[in-house]
Length: 116
Ligand SMILES: C[S@@+](CC[C@H](N)C(=O)[O-])C[C@H]1O[C@@H](n2cnc3c(N)ncnc32)[C@H](O)[C@@H]1O
Image 1 (cartoon, rainbow, N blue to C red):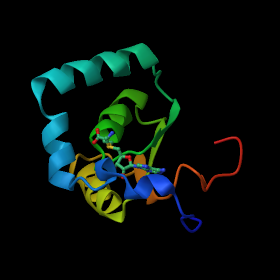
Image 2: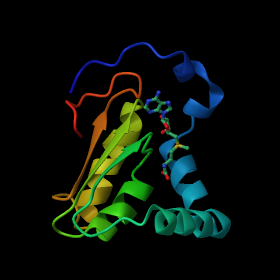
Image 3: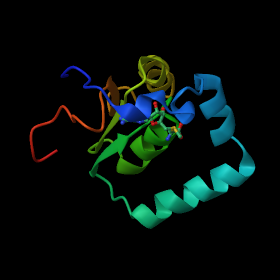
Image 4: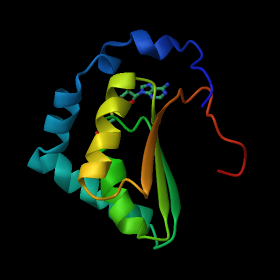
């Protein structure tokens, strides 16, 4: 993975939330309902390759890893190392560590060659 380049967004208050805050927010029923709807609208098929930019602690990537199935793959990136440090063990705990990986990276410098 490449180094993170400076991003003015990193000083924004909403980038300073804790892992617990993100997990707690994602577990609120209203948010869960919206998230499930957003997953459905993505029409992700088995075998798909998905990237979540700003993946936080991996709530969405783990759900999406279930949807892509064993032939698919999900990558999450987040500029906050605390999020990635929480997301990878969460994926492993969910039994999906082979299918989803999380990396520290900025949206302004995606560490992938094209096509993703
Ligand atoms: C609202 S949270 C995402 C929550 C996550 N989708 C979940 O459901 O748990 C937004 C995330 O975007 C990350 N972020 C903000 N700016 C970013 C950037 N330029 N590049 C990568 N990640 C960024 C923040 O660190 C934060 O974890």
